[in-house]
Every structure is written in structure tokens, then in C-alpha cells.
Length: 165
Image (cartoon, rainbow, N blue to C red; front, side, top):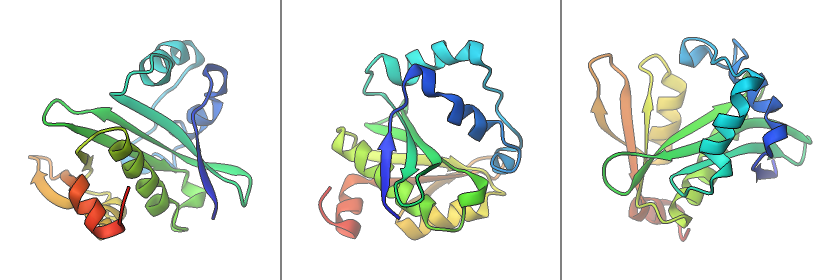
């Protein structure tokens, strides 16, 4: 697996549409997220077009198979110097190591961009993602009233586990 992270142009959001509107891929999310073309401009301006360090978004592309396999993103959280992560691997590419590699790339990017801490809130029924984050080194910091689990990893913990950023 030889991954690169591709920040799409405004006209290249068709893969995101395919990804978030695919029922099998979005099962963990309790359903698809409609992404009609008329929303692409506003979405793009918020996540990519404004060069705001509080947002990051990229496709995961595997050069070995010459295909996009998912997406990674983060957005600034309201507390501390941290960001909330998002990673979606297309259903047909799951259980092949893309989640772990995508997570490592996303976390590395966040820390290189100056963030001290990364977080994610994972649905109670998304046991695979919970295991991925736990095995990666994230710690559980909260379980909300609905049973969703919040994970956190600090920059220093990441360096201790994986070496320099």
C-alpha cells in the first residue's frame, strides 16, 4: 500500500459524493449524508477553499491500486488546542489496513499543522472504529448519554508510540 493524500479541487468532489451517499460505506453513520452538487461550493469554501488551519480535508489515494479508498478530515474543537477527526474508508476497502494508515496520516498532519491533541467521537455500535482508535493509542476520555465513545490522543503520546512527527 502506497498512500498519498489528495486535496480535491472544487470540481473534483464527485468521489466525496459517491463515498458519503453509499449506504454500505455509511452504515456506521446510521445512513447516508446527501451531498448534492448545489452544496459543493459552500462545503468547499468551508473545508478547503479558505485556507483556514481549523479545517483539513483530503482523499486517500492508493498508488498501488490507482484508486481512491476513502477520505480524512479534521476540524477545530471548541476546547483546548485540539481537532476532531473524521475518517471514512469506502466499504469495499475496509479490513485492509487503510483505516490505520489513513488515521496515522491524518494525525501526523494535524500535529505538523500545530495541534496538540486529536479527538474523535465514535458511535457506540461502531466497534471496529473503536478498536482501531484504541489499538492506535487513543485513550477513552468520555462516553456520552447515548453510549458514543470519545477518544483522545496527545502529541507527546503519539511521539512516544510512533517516533518523531
